[in-house]
Image 1: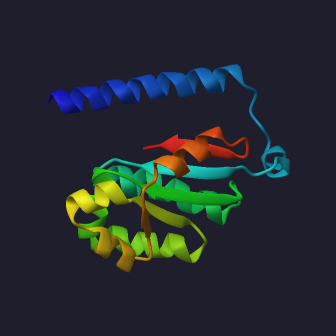
Image 2: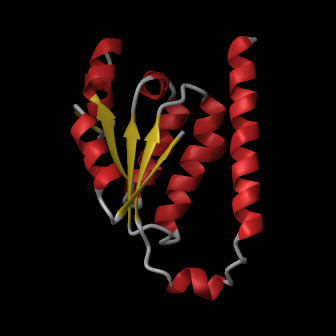
Length: 149
């Protein structure tokens, strides 16, 4: 129950932030969005929640790449998400579809090793490596946006 409360409070905070951002910024026409330079996007996926993967993280990553909302899309599989992915055939199929359109997948080696799934993730075409330095470089880079789920 405590975990659910934390998740709900987090969602309310995010919703309030997004609402405030939307209210304070004028809407962009579709042409204006297309005229903007597409950023590079690093998505840090940590949630072990299957619905979060299917209904948000994967949907956004696939569409960001497919629709050129981002020049590059890298998905970093970290923590509980790696365990979830290693056991879920539907999520694995979704990852393969995203890889086909150019989404790059990397996984945290420390986490994957702790779950005993490094080999399984590599079989899925995911580069398994220590990700601390890479994530720090994404955060520091001017041409990368980092989002976490």
